[in-house]
Image (cartoon, rainbow, N blue to C red; front, side, top):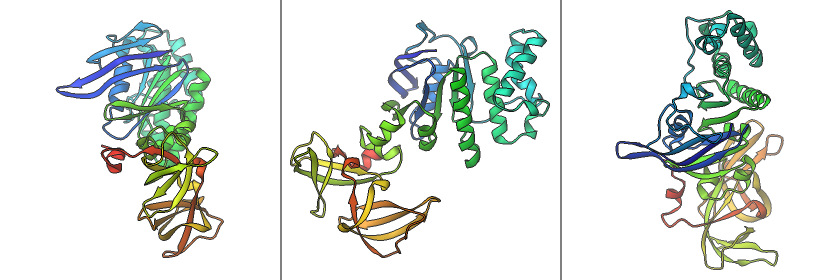
Length: 360
C-alpha cells in the first residue's frame, strides 16, 4: 500500500506533538521513523495507523482519504512495544483471533493460523500459552497475529525495545525478511540508530515534532545534511573551525581552534566562514605527524577498541583501533589525521553547537 501524509498535525491542548508532516511511502517500502524520546515518533505512527485522528491534515492510503477511518476498518496491523497477547489463549488461538472475529470458517482460521505461524517459525509452539514463551518468541507471535488480519500495512511501535540485545538483533532481521517476502509496507518506530540502519529502506529522522531529515541509511550515515543527523545517526567527532580556502581539487581547507590547518570534503563555504567539521571515529587515524592529542580513555567494543583523546584544540576526538592491533595506553601522545573525503563541513549554528545537537 502507498501512504501519503499531507500537512499532518496532532495537537494536545496547546502543544503540537507533531506538525507540518508531509511524507510519501512507497508500496512495499520498509520505512523507519527514528528520533530521540519525545520527538513525536509514536504520535505520528498512531495517526497513520488510525488509532488517533489528526488535528490537521490528511492520511491518504492508495489514493483514498482514510483520515477519519479507525484502525479496525483499515488493512493495518499494529505491534506495540509492550507485547500484547491474550494470556488465556494458546499461540494458535492468538494468531487466529482476527480471522475468527471476521467470521471465517474454522477450516480457514486453522489454515491462516498455521500459515502465519510457519512464517515466523513458531508453528511448533502453536499449543503453548504466551507465558511459556520467551520475549522474542512472544513478539514473533504478535507480528504473526498482526499479519493474520490480512494487513497490507504493518506498524511496528518500538517492537524490540523490551527484548535482550541478542534477541533484538536476530528478530529485526527476521522481521525484515518476513515483510519483504510478503511485500508489505512497513512503518517501524525506534530510537535505536543501529536498528534503523540495519532494517530500513529509508529513515525519517524526527526532531521536536517535525521531520528533520529523510534518506537511505547509507546516505544519512555517509552524507548527513545536518549536524544533528551526523550526531544522532552513528557516532561522530564535531570540531568548530573556520574556512581558510579551497584546494585545487575543491577540498575545503579549515583552521582548527589551535590554528592547525586541515583538509575536509568539498563544500560551498568560502574563506572566513565559521563552520563545524564532522568526522566519524573510523575515519580518524594515527600517523607520524598530525593533530597532537593525548589518550584519555580506552573502551573495548568487541571487534575494536574505542580510543578517546583530547586534542591540542581542546576537542575530544575518538578513533578506533582493531582488536588485533596494538592499543595505546592512557596518557600516550598520538598524532591524528582525518580522512578528508569523509570529513564533512557544516555551517556553525547561530545558537551554538550544543543547542544544535541537543536531544530534547
